[in-house]
Length: 318
Image 1: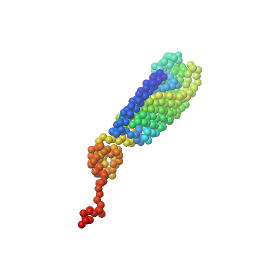
Image 2: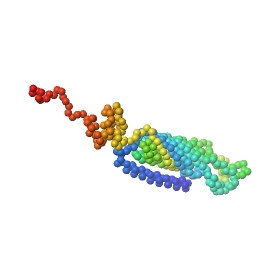
Image 3: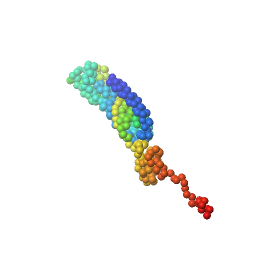
Image 4: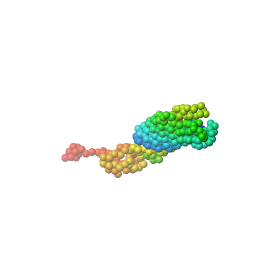
């Protein structure tokens, strides 16, 4: 518990500092929006997120370490700032020999007793809404619900030469339970479609165990259903597919204009003048670009026209 609380405080502090830093970056980049912009568009985002899980309640199998190796996979489709997604993952715990020896000593079990153990694990598949804010640096959150496949692990302590165990804890009558998860992350861009992120989350579900404890007066196996609460923290990589890159205005046209073609975004007229005239331009025309005057001469009709029915005064006089 002490390790879990310390990790929670440390990572929460780091997350808060990162959030402030992200807000500062987005604020500083507002003045550069004409040069570079990562607009939020509809797109698929897939991510992989390795990290650690920490048990934050005291109902784990005796000898189980506070921390677990955790990996999460997710796919989300965003409609602008909001989206829907599905996530799955697993966490693998371990029962350490040192912790088991401490448990034997605390309960006055024979030190030469036979110990049989298996490690706990958790697997899940969840679905729920997602939200994200920011342009260059983004802050996102998800709230999901679904099913957990929980293995509480096992621990059996049997005295030498005895046919019956003094202590036995194993899985109960089922291991499939409902549960939910909440997650918050900060994403930093690597390029226009790939991001690095740090995340923190909370998962809650239940476990079922069957316990036999002779020294506690439980001489018939007893079924117990208990809450399982886990705090997670990690880093990851996300990849976006199907989104459009933000507008660019850096002295280059947004694309080659062909017959019947269309270019969206900020257009530098100096380059647009050198493309085929039959293309159509959609976006912002930059009048301060080189070649603006020539381009206007092409796209604006003459101010004077000739009317064949109008006769010159000299002709009427003759």
